[in-house]
Image (cartoon, rainbow, N blue to C red):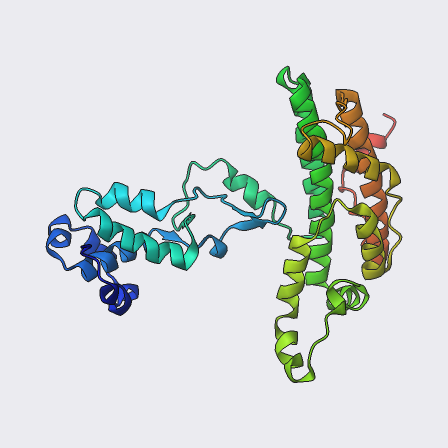
Length: 322
């Protein structure tokens, strides 16, 4: 019969466990089952946390993006740390508690210094109206640099570069919409009022104030879950929400179909024919994206009366004919 009893699992005060106690192997060996479980959970939670507290959510792949290391499985971590000290079934009781709380993929509380994506993550935060365009330009430049390498000329790399260019456009649209609906209350109201999907839900009058309190967060989740490469649906949503004219998306929609074949059909169309994507075609897609976004930026700047940045005080010196 297992040493772990249901009443021990239910009654123990594991949330108050001391992480320091778990570090003492002598104490842990002689502790009761409830104390062992509580101490291991306390130790684990002093080093790892629910990824919802720090990780970005990738709606398309339905997963968290662990920018600071991980994910860490409580089973792997606790077995490695306590496997020689605590019986297996007791460790599993602690693991079940942790998995029940936040799943089997946890994030580190202390970020790893050698994680290469840390600086990248900071650079991808949208803090200014110019950030979405800057981040798009950076990503497209990365794609171009990759295409110039020997590896970047392989068929698979070229196909992935095509998909990455479309994804960069999706990110630009998402970042732009998210920034302005958070920054400008009038824009937020306009998006809510004109959005045929999000705005169609009926709310009982008795719940209206509760719903208002969480409206911004709900709309944020709606934007996160939106399929941004459906440009035929995104275009009218942006036009109604921002009150702007979005450039034509017909040619880009053709490339979205190509991306779909690459990502979801292994590079073949619905009839099974191979989709031919060349370096020049990818560069053509990048040019289309830049042209589209340039048009978007003109409309956004007009809508929000954003002035072009002033030239540097000494820029004019290069124009002097001597």
